[in-house]
Amino acid sequence: MKLDIVAFGAHPDDVELGCGATVAKEVAKGKKVGIVDLTRGELGTRGSADLRDVEAANAAKILGVEVRENLAFADGFFKNDKAHQLEIIKMIRKYQPEIVLCNAIDDRHIDHGKGSQLVSDACFLSGLLKIETELDGKPQEKWRPKHVYHYIQWKNIEPDFVVDVSGYIDTKQEAVLAYSSQFYDPKSNEAETPITSKNFIDSINYRARDLGRLIGVDYAEGFTTERYVAVASITDLI
Image 1 (cartoon, rainbow, N blue to C red):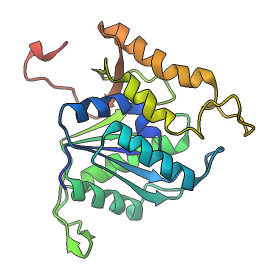
Image 2 (image 1 turned 90 degrees about the vertical axis):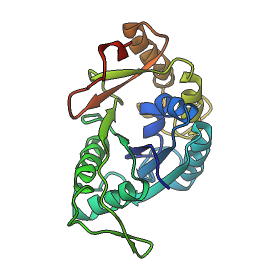
Image 3 (image 1 turned 180 degrees about the vertical axis):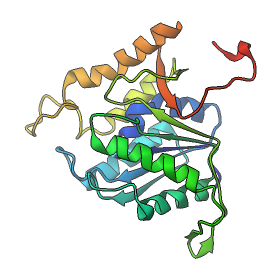
Image 4 (image 1 turned 120 degrees about the vertical axis):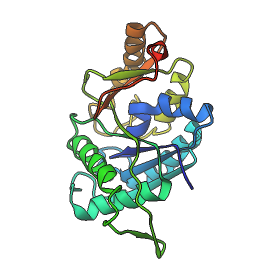
């Protein structure tokens, strides 16, 4: 199955939090989008890996993506090495996306930066003919995405470009809240973390509103890119 966009996340919920509204918007426009999670988030303070599997599946339905896969890398301990790169390459060659979305290049959680560089490196290597991979016993063809974009997560990194996601913020919030075990719950007796506060959940809305304010729309999501942003015409800018 060829997809237009594949969004990678170091953990289930990274994609929803980082670019969930953008994903929802592209799906609504008819684009085929998939999500690949690198780990099952088994080191998360609240909930369990099995529960997050269920939550991730529910979130995928809300966003309307074509497929969601989990590579089951070791949460907190995966590396940017040949073995892990090859597993990412298999996913890229399997779905042949034009665009790859992945973690922030620098962030509070160590897996985000690692995941970002791992996916970026794999996108380049996937285009090399002499790297041979197989999937289900069949050789894969080389494939390199045209674009690799990094969504913004905990840190307020200055974006290289922003996407108007007005009309899709509610879908993003619903997808995020599908991970009910992970976020704010005043009735929970589990340990508190930086992402379990009400302020963190509220930030989904107010951060998107602030980016939207800066470009004159209601809501926006920001991305960084590995090369210059180009437009066919100056009139393409909004």
